[in-house]
Image (tube, rainbow over all chains, first blue to last red; front, top):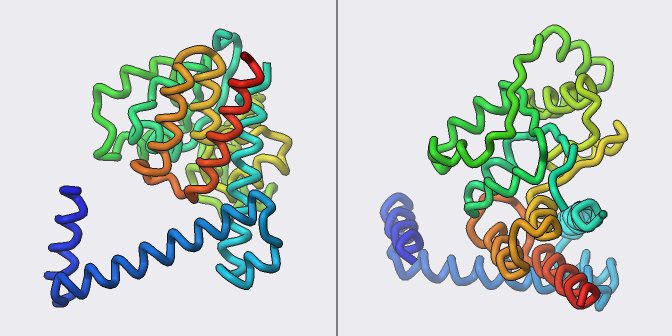
Length: 82
Length: 175
């Protein structure tokens, strides 16, 4: 929380915007990120199709999630091997 | 499960990410961790890793590599897109015959697999530390969450959530 307040103050000062405007932008960015992660989660859990995920968050995010998912599965396979 | 003869070559990212979640000691699952000097220089420059933290990883062995040999290796294997530390890690794997490359970089993972190496990321190290009974399941879950919340590792939340689900399934299976 302390860091967040420091960031907020610094951003407001250095971008010369009121803190309320920075907070509004942060809220919008935060919700967008949560929404993106929600959609990627639904895709990786096979609750929605790849096409639907791409239409919602874009191909770049879908491909990145696929690569991270593959890496995670490889890591788990290695870690759990006897 | 001990560390046996498990050896690996390590890139800078995992040192940094594990240090950020207070998990540097998990790297002791390896009997020996080989690190190119270029990578080590990058690691010790990180302000988030205190000098005292390095005492937690006595298994690190640093290597000074001949730049001419690395350059030749990079050209032969078309590795120009990678950073010098990653290039040196791949070279060191080949030189030592090490089959495990510890890296969190997705592009480096791809190249490692093309070279028949096994890439392992920070997430894998945490889970292996649990598997080797160095930490409890609760600790493993905590550190996986921390990798998303408090480290500079670039990973989406869902990946960590799915890893936690898999870990939970493993626990149920063991019981």
